[in-house]
Length: 130
Image (cartoon, rainbow, N blue to C red; front, top):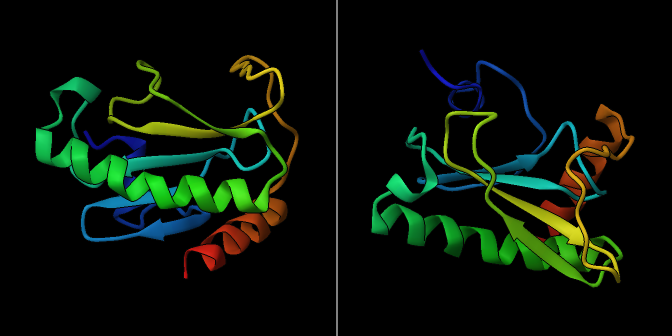
């Protein structure tokens, strides 16, 4: 059965897309832990991050780098944190999360937002990539 991320990639489930290329997709997390929280996923469905091929892993991180810079330019923060968590979705992915001066992320506390705010921020971040 396809993961929720594969369904997003295939257009079966909508998302607030930030960027896309032949190999990867970046979109706003709908349960963000901070304003500007973006998920970056490879289009190939592999459950465990460290089971990605070296080529796919390199493409994923190269794709994520300019997105992180765009988020940092759009959202007030000290820097962008990168984290790989593991079990909630069986599809390898990275979280790009704006960090405050403490450099802390709590994945238990969610940032309150709505789809209109996510769509607007996705558009702003995407525009910085152009």
